[in-house]
Length: 205
Image 1 (tube, one colour):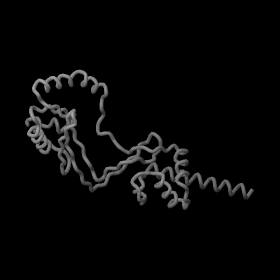
Image 2: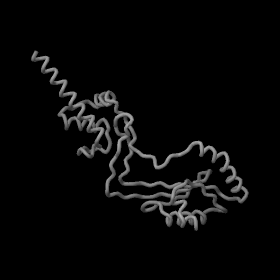
Image 3: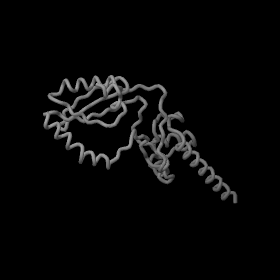
Image 4: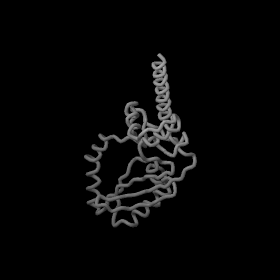
């Protein structure tokens, strides 16, 4: 009887510990718990279990537990916009051939333009989380960033400019001025529907 009671108590504590660990992974990121990790990797979970429960497990065992709990390695990233494949196909079929014909007729060059940014609080990698629940990384309040504007031709000719901060109308206009000065002939620039592209200053330029 005593042996059965002891075994039942052990299983109860183990179940409580598992529930506690799952809750911590679901509700927090490692750095919030004082761990030297940004995302929930197996090593991060292993260290958290050791600190919280006083149990040191093999990394392979951690992977087994995570799979049993229904946790999968996911990218904690958000898409800035949604693309419509149908609209893209229609544009390539109807609009792009017209631009190509115009550029060829005026001996111009077609450039494909885009912008991107690099932030000090950006996180790349995968973090374990319950299946279907994308993990959320809480941003740092103090952050720095760089912007990049680039344009490339179908032949691979590249033009680019690095910015201290986000892409805004004045910097975009400066890039466009450099682009046309460097090009031989008329420039046909294709870019997306970013708000700065439709700004009054850019349109006036």
